[in-house]
Structure formats: structure tokens, C-alpha cells
Image (cartoon, rainbow, N blue to C red; front, side, top):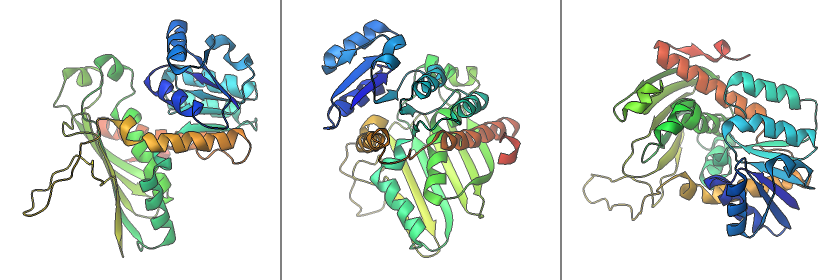
Length: 332
């Protein structure tokens, strides 16, 4: 396979490194809106570079998009129009209208589009989903999802991120849907600002909590923060009438029990999402090779990203207006 990569930032270069290690991948071509950055990344990786405007005429079998969010719609559409299967990191677009426009544009094509929600490819989340689906937990009554970043991103990133629910919580919203096999009917969300002023200046919050009511009555809570100094902490508890399981409670979870006689976890804590989910990213990209080869359909389509975005949008409205919001208010 000959694969292209659009976006030579941190996650893009990590993906390029992974892709070139697959036996099926003969070559990787890196492009970026900053041509010098693309050339520099390609030289370090030992792969080819190409101008971004020429990427889709470079004889590609598939393309991976890791560019800035505002470039996602154009790159997805360009790939589909060229008949090239495309993997794009979330989100599809910066907002719901933009996401709907992309879905409408690509709906008539049979070219496969895979959206990057790497938690679906994490072994722990997959095991939790299997436990729910098998019935071994009994009937599900509670899901508790957590994403705690160890330190906030730069102010300039926050100003264009879309907010904590859309930028960060969207992963939890997607995984709640995926693990439970259910849709969300209603949300109630709150947020707080106790850290840097630039969050409030951007109309955002640095810490948030949301309660989600699933369409079978199951309750889910999602907790988010940008200030978990102990380390990167991502977990999910799935609790049923018979049993329960937890994802993310491993030797590197940044938790310390204060119960007498309980040994501390050995650590060290994960410093960030790339380290925590490195195996999941590899599995996710391997799944994309199956999509490119025609062996499997996309495991995470644009409509999945839209549903997670709807939940994030509902949470943002709920936080601002301090009221429950039904998903029917935001679905279009």
C-alpha cells in the first residue's frame, strides 16, 4: 500500500511512524500546509514529502488526516472525490453544521471514511463492551467515565478548541455509546473555572461534569478536567445488577489509596494520551488498513462522530443555561 498523511504535527508524525512499520505499507507520503514542516518530518521519518495540494494525485491507496480541525472537511471531501479511503482524526468538522455538510457531501459515495476515536480500539474498553453485550454484568445501571488531563493546553489552543465538552469529553461520549450499545436521550452538565483565566476568556471551563440519561434509563456520568497534576487519568466503570468492570485501573493509573495496608500502584503515571493509548492507535490504524484493502467496512463512520458531537453540544447548552437538555433539541 501507498499511504498519504496530511498533517505533520505531533500525532501526525506518530501515525506516520506507525504506518511505515506495517508490512503491508510500501511507502508513506507526508504533506502539511507548512511545506517546510512536512519536509522536516519526512526526513526524520525516512519517508517522502509532497505538497498538500498534490497529495491526492500521488497514487495513494489511502490517506490519514491529522491536520488542524478547520482543514478536516476539505481533506475528507478531497479524498472521497478522488476515490481514496480516508482516516480522519476527530472531529469531522468544527461544528454540527459543518459535520452535516460533510456527511451530506460524502453520502452518495461508497468510498470508506473512518473517524479516529481510538478508545474503541483499546483492549480494556473492548473488554468492557463485550462484558456488557454478553449480559455477564446483568442489566447495566451506571457508567462512570473520566478524562483528567494532567495540565492545560496553551491559551491559543483553548480559544479555538470548541470547549471542554467538544474537544475532550467527546471521546467519553462516544465510548459511552459504544460500550453500552445505547443512545443518549438527555444530558445535564455543569462546569467550573478555578485555573487559568484564559478558559473563562474563551467562554470555556477547565473542569466539568455531565449526567447522561441513556435511552433505556441507564445513567452515565462524565467527569473532565484540565488540571489533574497526578497524571493522565482516563477510566470507565460499567456497573450492572450482577457485576461490574473498570477500564483504566492499571499499574500506571494516577491514584493513591489511603486505606491502611493497601500498596501504592507502581507507576509512573501516564504523562498524556499518546502514551496511554499508543497500542490503541496502532490497532486503530491497522483496522484502517483493512478498510483500505476492502477487507472490512469502516469501524467508526462520520455519523458516529456526529452523534458524539450532538451530545457535546447538548452538554454545552446545558452548562450555559443550567438546565437539562434533550438530544432532540440539537439533532438536525
